[in-house]
Image 1 (tube, rainbow, N blue to C red):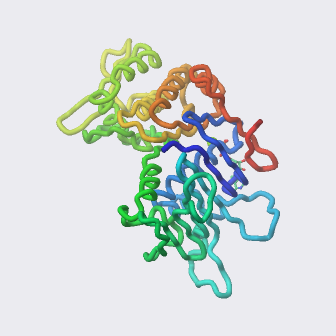
Image 2 (cartoon, helix red, strand yellow):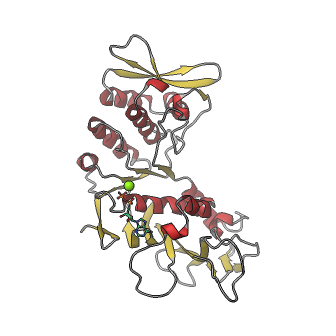
Image 3 (cartoon, rainbow, N blue to C red):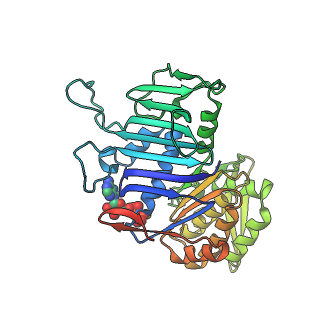
Length: 362
Ligand SMILES: Nc1ncnc2c1ncn2[C@@H]1O[C@H](COP(=O)(O)OP(=O)(O)O)[C@@H](O)[C@H]1O
Ligand SMILES: [Mg+2]
């Protein structure tokens, strides 16, 4: 179920953005142009479907921080919208501050991202006949498997999507398949390579076909590729990107630890001795060579702390991964964007800030 469009309104510097998406998407632009904002908008869509939208907004500093702070054309309260389209379905959710004052319920949670409207429909255009789910004014109507429009009887959290709170998959199979498809997306923004990072110590040996978002289970993910994935490409890419080095995963009865043999070094170098850049590159290799490719992989600024020599092999991995997963890469490295373009023919989408608003450079 590839994503064909992402739409964002009034989220940080994204006042109004409708973005058509392809199998491989490269987003570039100078610092502060909104690359990370756009990446996070996509990440929030996944959080909406997972049922952790409110917590995610909270982690970002809360509604007061994430709502568009640019010029307002009307006195109406600011509302933020996030939406996406696949070939078959469209989804949109609008949220804002809870109503206050007379008639509104009294609550201390004045920063809740209250869902004002939510809808899922077939195809690109929303019409009564194509609508599958409709939430507005505190009422939710859903079309069930027999085509009947029913009022959803369960009490819903007002700061989470209906899609994430739905039960009874047998009654709403299409909505469930949409939700599950989005829940399989993977996001990689910051790999923890600090001294205390779990990837620098031994990890319990558990098969790990998909690297965790912070790379903490890197040793297990690499060992999984060695056992059931594309071991040859793994070795080839390490040989070309890190000349003179080979990967060796140390095994005890119950744990795994990353090690590297390096020319000119008599003993194996262990995870806690490897450089941030080396570990980060290994994380990117592990997520892009996953033996169970996720439907979508999104990387935010993967070039950070990588030597420029590692960018061509990274581009090669990204282009290869896009044959199995839809891929999103936000980057300010023109070297990486150019290398991807040379290998795939995909030109980057360049963002810039215009009066505080992120726009696409035409
Ligand atoms: N609530 C907001 N309203 C409007 N603009 C915002 C808001 N929050 C952050 N910004 C703007 O977003 C920009 C940072 O975007 P970001 O995606 O981090 O840039 P980068 O392209 O470097 O990744 C800054 O210019 C900042 O002023
Ligand atoms: Mg950024």
